Image (tube, rainbow, N blue to C red):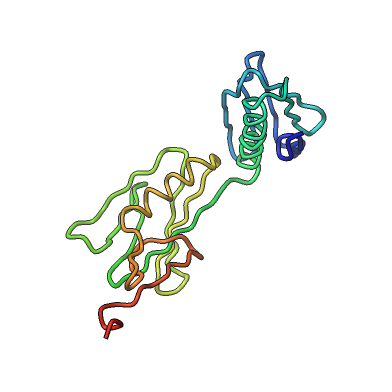
Length: 184
C-alpha cells in the first residue's frame, strides 16, 4: 500500500470540496478557489472533513499516480486554507527592488531596470525593514505558481559563486569559491 497516497487529507470548517463524475475537483476556502482535473482512474471520496484517495489496482501506473493525486489535493487544501509564501533576498551593492503599479521593479546591476509583472493570482511585496537587503515576498494560493514565480525572479540574477551577489532564497546557502589569489 502506498505510504503517502493512503493518508487521508483533513480540511477545516471554512473549506468545501466538490468532486464531479469526471474527477474535476474544486476546493474553495477563505483564501480563494482552486480547481484541477485528476486522473479518472482514481477514486476520490469526501467524508466528514477528510478527503480519501483510493486506487483501483496495484498496477505500476496506478501506484505512481496514487501518491501524486494525494499530494496535489493536499496542496490545494493547504493553499486555500493558509496560502503559500516564498521569500527572496537581494544581495549586492546598488541592487534593490520596489513595487509600483503592481509590477516589481528590480535594479540588479544591469544597465537598465528590470520590470516583472506577476500573474493575477500572485501578490508581491518588498520588505526593506529587515536590514540592508531588500526581501521580496511572494504570496499566493497555488503552490506550483508561487514556486515558479520565485524561480523566475531568482533566474534574473542568480547568486554568483565568488562574491555571492544576486537574488537568492531567504536561508539559501551559496558556497563561495576562492578567487585567483588562492592559487598562489
